[in-house]
Length: 103
Image 1: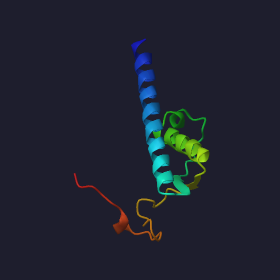
Image 2: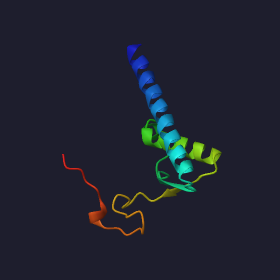
Image 3: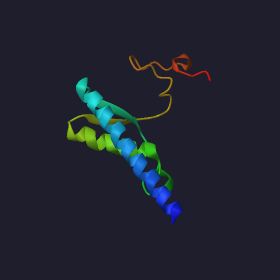
């Protein structure tokens, strides 16, 4: 019984955090008059897979999409390939554009 309780507690925590993060993203986009939000395209992964249902990032995307629609912000899905190397201003892709932290 304790394992089930912990599992549900983690799920509720993840849901609460994703609601807070998605609300923050939408409020920031709305404040700065951003008409479009870009998210990584996860369409190659089936919604029926257990892994995807438990993946926090997918849940966060769903919440962002839902809340963006409510305030009239468009959400588009982009190919995640090279996104960490793509310069946001012009779209140029270079290895030097990738930010890496030194630990």
